[in-house]
Length: 211
Image (tube, rainbow, N blue to C red; front, side, top):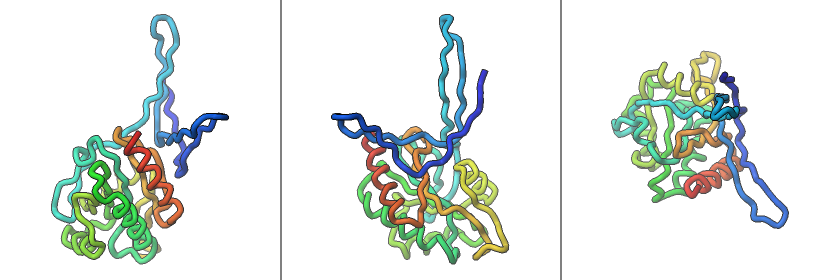
């Protein structure tokens, strides 16, 4: 018998503290999971199976294909934005730039930003945007692709991204940064417009890199 359940997104770290013992940091695994009950050697055994990030394929600002293999065995941070966004995106990109700068030279960390406006956000436009930020595509991929695929990916990450004619810029989307571990499991969700939450994100990245 299997029972499908959900873990609520949490953008915070967990600390397990025992008297007289060193503080040990733990990060939850977030997202849908399945609890499977099996009988093994006459005993009931319960196992928890967490969802992993599904395969994907997009194109970045240097026309490189970015797919599941790009992040294989690495920690990565992902978000959704569009270059003409007049509201939260500039704040998000400045905060992501802090992450980019803080982990300069760290080959095991990848940043992945999806444009939710692929009609206007061509490869060339993403390249111009990236150049203005002064970033390199081997560390921070700004990707475009089929709009339905991008929106479906956002839903897979449990965040919002959609066309909204009433929203500034014509799109509504989450300002969240998601932290994914080497096993492609979501380990944290953070407000990408908040310096304080991005500080926590960077602490959690450091922890995952050395987990």
